[in-house]
Amino acid sequence: MSNQFVMRSLDEIRFWSRIMKEHSLFLKLGFRCEDTQLIQEANQFYRIFEHIEDKSHSFTELTDPEQIKRFNMEVYSAATHIWAFKRKVLGLIIQCQLPGGNNFPLLVDHISREANYFRNRLEELNTGRLEPLPDAIIDENVFFLRIMADHAKFIGHLLDPSERQLVEQARNFSHDFDQLLFQAIDLSGMRPQSQTQPLLGQFLDQNRVSVVSLRDFKKTAKELIEACRIKSIIHPLLADHVFREAERFLHIIDMFEASLAGNH
Image (cartoon, rainbow, N blue to C red; front, side, top):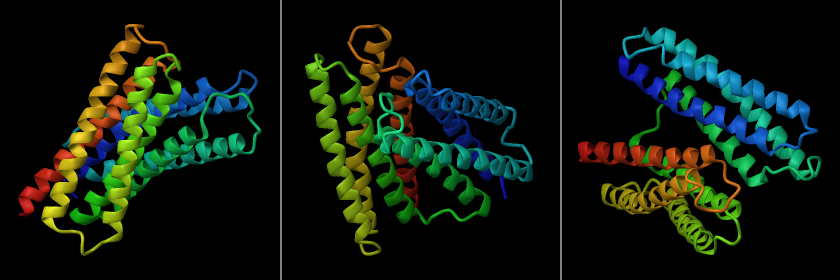
C-alpha cells in the first residue's frame, strides 16, 4: 500500500463524511416534531460523521497506510449504519407510518444510494479491488447521472410553484439527465464490446457538457437562495450540497479523461 492509497482514502472520506453529516440534518428537518426517536438518531449520525470529518483532517499523505486502513474500516461501519437508518426511514414513509413528514421517498432512497456508494468505495480501497478503467467509467457515470437526474427533480419540487421559469428549467434538466442515464445503461449493457476508447471518450465529453450546465444552474440557484431572491423551501445548505456533488462528478470525469488519454 502506498501514499496514493492514503490520499484516495482521505479524499473520499473528507468529501463523503461531510455529505453524510448533511444528510442527517436534512432528514431531521423533514421529520415531524413528534418523531423524537428518529430526530435523536439523526442527531447522533450528525455527530458521528462530524467526528469522522474532523478526524480525517488530522491525517496527511504521509500517514501510515495501515492506520488509514483501520480508519477506513471505522468509517465503513458508520456508513453501513447510516445506510440502514435511511432504509428504515424509507420503509416507514412508504408504509405511511410517517404521514405529513417532509422527506420525499425518492430523496431518502437517493441518500441511501450515496451511503452505499461510499461504503463500497472504502471496501474497494481497503481490499485493493478497484475496477478496471473502462468499467469504472461506465459504472461511475451510471451512478452519478442518476444522482444528477434526482437533484433536478428535487429542485423542481422544492421551488415554489410560482417560480415557473426555474421549475421549467429544473424539469428540462431532469429530462436531459434521464436520457443520459438511459444512454449510460445502454452502453453498460453492451459491455465489453462497448468499452472502446472512442466510445468512452465521446461518452465522457457528452456527459461533461450537461454536468457543467447543471452545475452552473445549481450555482445560480444557490446564490439566489442565499440572497433570498427566489421563493422556495430549499435550505441554503441543501443548495450548496447538490452544487458540491455536481463539482465532484466533474472532478471524476476529469480524472477519467486524463486516464483515458494516458492509456491511449
